[in-house]
Amino acid sequence: NFGDTIMKNAKSIAVGAAMLCGVFTASVASAATTLESVKEKGHLQCGVTSGLPGFSQPDDKGNWTGIDVDTCRAVAAAIFGDSQAVEFTPLTAKERFTALQSGEIDMLSRNTTWTLTRDASLGLNFAGVNYYDGQGFLVNKGIGVDDATQLDGATVCIQAGTTTELNLSDYFRAKGMEYKPIVFDTSEQTVQGFASGRCDVLTSDRSQLAALRSKLSDPDSAKILPNTISKEPLGPVVRQGDDQWFNIVKWVLSVQINAEELGVTSDNVDDMLKSDNPNIQRLLGTDGDMGAKLGLPDDFGAKAIKQVGNYGEMYDRNVGPDTPLGLERGINALWTDGGVLYAPPVR
Image 1 (tube, rainbow, N blue to C red):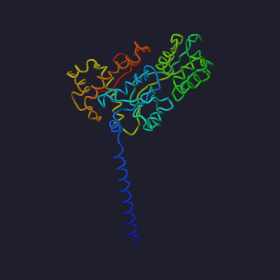
Image 2 (image 1 turned 180 degrees about the horizontal axis):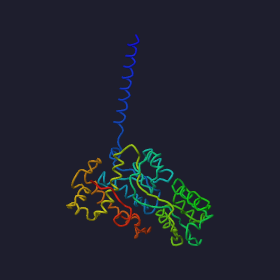
Image 3 (image 1 turned 90 degrees about the vertical axis):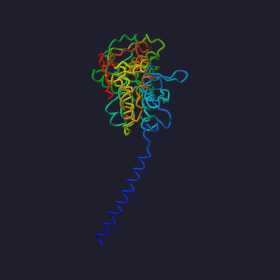
Image 4 (image 1 turned 135 degrees about the vertical axis):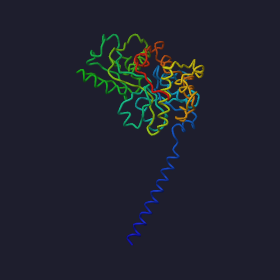
């Protein structure tokens, strides 16, 4: 009868729903977290540039250095206690997001600007800022230009797949000026185009301009104009959907920034383990369970600082005044020193 039919259908629906729920639960249970996957591989896979001095650059023996490289090494140190437990995947600007989305890399640390569109539409999360930058212009001193407002009609070398393309268009339109873009796939090709005279101007983030200028046969022949036409907060990126991994990458960088503020360095970290300052105790894991909350050893911060250094050490070693890039801290100074660098507290 009608009542029996209803009951049979209800039972069938319930059984089907239970089976689907079981399949879903099993699939969730079998899907390894990023941390589990990284531990199983025995190393972190980090996406970087194909070669940008100060940020991510291999030497002739394949040893990578740079502030973005160190950001990855600090995460490896926090997980494995070994900053060398990381392998690097060189990526162009156009390749970088696909490599992260597909799982080819575990994190991206490739002078990448944090924007709303990237945050909201690519399935990615920015885990902080390791360099506050802005777009500028590199010109040959011989053309007699001292300000970007004099660039009307210029030919501009630019790298594809970057925020600089839209910024450039916005700036020239707002100033009522025209330009001719010459687009390249890599930063290496871009600087070669500039060096060969294919364009009057090279535009990119100011830190990248300093790095590319250092690659010229005669760096003193070119200068960076004083204009900054955009905000470019650069930082590490992870896939959405794994909050634990997002937290790990975010808090390792935050620990490095907090360490500089608290005066903890790679040289004195062992002595600082004896500190009675509760902020330092939590930072280094001698008190509390900060690491356990992330799925890491409680001394993850001490390991990252010991092997890679605090943020200031990382900055000075790679891009600071005593490097070929010669970049002053500027807005990348701590908030206590007139900059905007500020990390949430470890507590």
